[in-house]
Length: 175
Image (cartoon, rainbow, N blue to C red; front, side, top):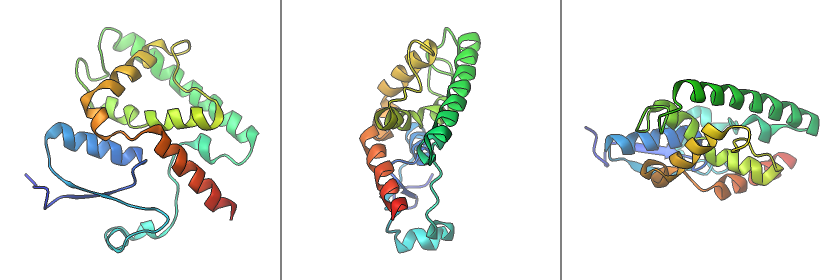
């Protein structure tokens, strides 16, 4: 197994994809060196390891990158429809389980859970609560359990980080 000196994770703190990797490595007990990247001032190591990062390509929640209120309203509608489908599936298939993976966190939990801090950022930025106990009671309860898990507490960033990053991207796009 790779030791901390062998495995390096180049990451953006607010990347849900990196959060997934960090959670999986933590759950598996794999040591690694975490290297925080600044997407506005990329390191030589990042550019060398992945030349595609020479571009600024925000791969993040669609609601945040909408340019007009109409676009945003449509994305919000699409997001609520998707959350509704996930809520129905959770209620039907996982109702008596703490997580999608059963009694412990599994892959689907990591995939959806790695986005929860961005959902909170969307709420703070636009006043839109993506998962709430009225429209999605099973998901809301799951999100609370997931957020309280040791695995999530170890690696999931605070929503404030995502809000700051979104504001920084908006400022850069306005130039």
